[in-house]
Image 1 (cartoon, rainbow, N blue to C red):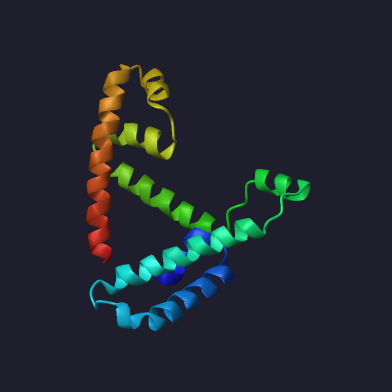
Image 2 (cartoon, helix red, strand yellow):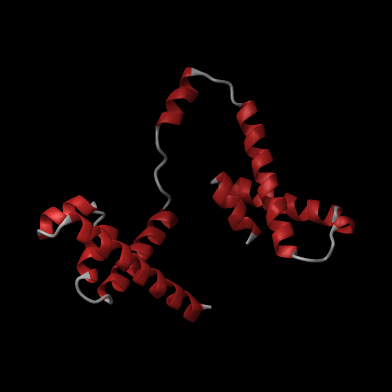
Amino acid sequence: MIYSICFKIVRDYFEAQDLAQETFVSAYKHLHTFDRQHEKAWLCRIATNKCYDFIKRAERRLEPTEYNFFLQEITPEPSPEENILELEAKKQLYDRCLKLKAPYKDVALDYFYKELSAKEIAEKTGKKLKTVQTQIYRSKAMLRKKYLKGGKKNV
């Protein structure tokens, strides 16, 4: 859990490992000040603060050069793990959209899966924009229920 927090913030495998280790060392050093309640939240807060401190230090070390300027404009490619996680999330979304009843199934697939705008869906289906917006709102609520129900089964 601590490593995943660090990795989400710094986006570097090795730095996240170091920061997770620093988190536990810091927690051990300050164990006498801990009130013995909410240990997960305490550790998560320490990890988050360590990561933010690391990012601030890293920004100060960077000297603005023409090379660094051009590197900042390039968007990094997603890692293979991120690609797989995104594909799995899209598959789950597609499967759950298919379980909705008409007309919400079609609207949900177009809006959430195909990422069409409400205006594009209205033009495609010939429905009024307000009708499509209402169906999007309702399908979102239905999908939220399906995701919550699906999450409880996996726990």
